Image (cartoon, rainbow over all chains, first blue to last red; front, side):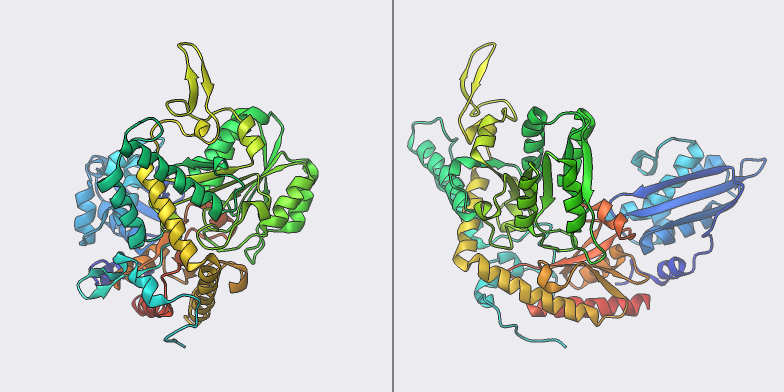
Length: 131
Length: 415
């Protein structure tokens, strides 16, 4: 089984490294996965070179959604906003190292959707961001 | 403690033998434990066969043809309507409108009776435990017409607060629309009492019977319902067909719903005259095979007997609640077994419902995780989502035992 619930995911779900809030922050965005009620808010600080210097996420939801947010936060630190905009669904899947059906995919990709909507400065997050 | 057999009103070997899907292995060596009947029920061979026979032997469009197939097809479609009418105690088959599902039935009432009879400031009473199909149509109509929506609160035990309802009735509502049985809490609401009080206050009553008609004996005349809506697919019938029952004088006075063939008596270039009941509300070619499948589902349920089915489910849910209680971290929502249908929605401390459902799925146990199309109810209880196990006539105590074993695995994994 337990590809889907590999130790990394359960561990980061229970003991996230990046859960919290950043005040003040430069970018913030939040969204829900209405299918299962997952919720993610991401806050970023960006330095003079447009690199992510600090990041925090908050929210609630399943192990996949929350662990994915935590792992994504780790990946994003030090990246330029340009690099963040270029992140794809495949990057998240590689990071999680699991295979997901269409329903759980939405859980896994919620944090990327929130992150990219925030970085693009969009009013609303769209699934197109994580195609 | 696990039990091997509950004394129930049904012959379980025979019943389970009627459902081909229950023989399926979800993955090699892992049989299916289907605990998601509240979402949609499985179909017995008798229903599948009736639809198959129709397509192999009879298929033709109804109501217009002269040839044998068209006549047989029309007779089969209308006979299904008559059987549905008998099943719910409707005084006439003409008061049974075929729709797509419960949702369409409720939308039909909102968009025809509602638009013709309600105006700005009118009060419509719903409950806090509605699923979206008995909530959103009224929200849409409220914003169109300027209606005022009020909600009967749900108590912490998962029951309707009847005193609060009596107080709301002082607002002189025009309509009360409520679920007969909650799809999340399982609560069986006192429909007869709700309707009696609504009528006393001068309001009409719409019953969302999506969960009650499949599981309990329901009579529209005993309830004195003005409208009652349900879907075939939750009662062993096919998807794509549902029913709206209405009181005759109401249906006759209502404008038509959709325009098209079959709903007209005469058509001129610039005008039409609507058809008589029930055809007035059935524009276009309907779901013929599905209506026949629904008729077969009614026959199937009647042969077993609705009281026997209700008794069986009562035994299963009582057993399920007892067993769920022993799993540490599990909290079941809703009233005690005797006040509810066979639905157990629960949270598992520290584990999201999606994770619970996914781990159970590995063992072939199909449950639902999420808000079950009742987001406001989850808000009320301040939980984002629940895991829901729901039971039907084909579920056994062994299914409950498998569920509980699965939950212990979840506990072990997330421990």
